[in-house]
Length: 194
Image (cartoon, rainbow, N blue to C red):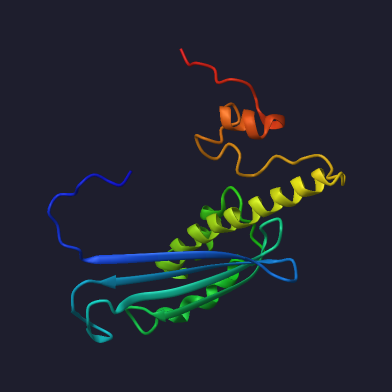
């Protein structure tokens, strides 16, 4: 169901974020994010001069290379369009995330390393959906591999609790989804609060 009918309005700004996840031949994963901001009207930029409608104000890319445990092994950051010529100068700072794990606390760690004048607001924001894309790419693939091995009779060892459990309402450890799909990690029915 789409959103309700909006009030009369004029379209002014579009931010497009596209993320893609790839399995590399060497066993690592590339997770790429691309952010583009455009205006629906012409304006004059202090640094870039006349900006016709649809000209990217921001056009930025990130590629994270991670391992199966979601540890960042490499990062590449490119700024193709920005409001000021000095904006791309900050991209080397993003090497600071190499070695971090995409897990609870990821956003806080990234902000502590790249917040404020140490980074770029838009690239730091883009690391959020890139991290989510890593989860969406890697965990379903790993689960399919585990199930395939189990169906073939290959010992898979004890099942580890999937990292995404207990991260949202639907995946609560005491909820019906976990009870049905991951019964080994189900903690029992929810207790009603008094």
